[in-house]
Image (cartoon, rainbow, N blue to C red; front, top):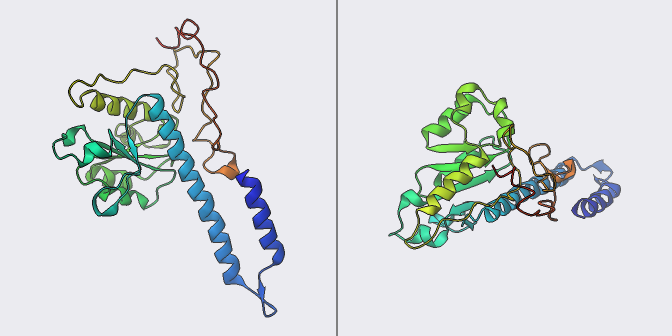
Length: 247
């Protein structure tokens, strides 16, 4: 729906032309083109956050999205939540922050000041093959990248040992949450977690379990990324059917 609407709006604007006083309005064309590209990038970033939010909720991981921290900053995800972050009595070692950016370039530095109580931060990205100089600088500033397992091969071996995949981050968030406030049981493991990461080679995929649209293959909507409609899981089969997939 968004694609059709934008195509109609953009086509109408292009059809009107970019001219002023019998001259080509180059600045007007560039400004309009930039606004279209920025809108697409914004939509891609929001889609990534929506997918992550659904993944966390499906795994019972408590979190706050876009909570306000120091100096009006808004980290993408705070664990276990904004209330715990603002509580001075809550152990800082139990707090976690995750930023989400489909591409990085130099924007990774933006997350460094988003949660002062959390010295070691995490940033999820879909960008392959970031230079080792940049990842070394990230590590020096206590920032660790979370990258889907399918993209690890695009990094050098020395970088791969430092990277974290989505499965590893979910396990970290679950472990910290399990050690939260007294009397709170740890969250259950959800066997129907959408596969943002591939299963082990020796595992058997449940034949009736739906899967997520890949976030790695396409980054923005015009490249056919999954939209706002539910894309997975499509079915939730009974436990006996998926018994082998859970082993």
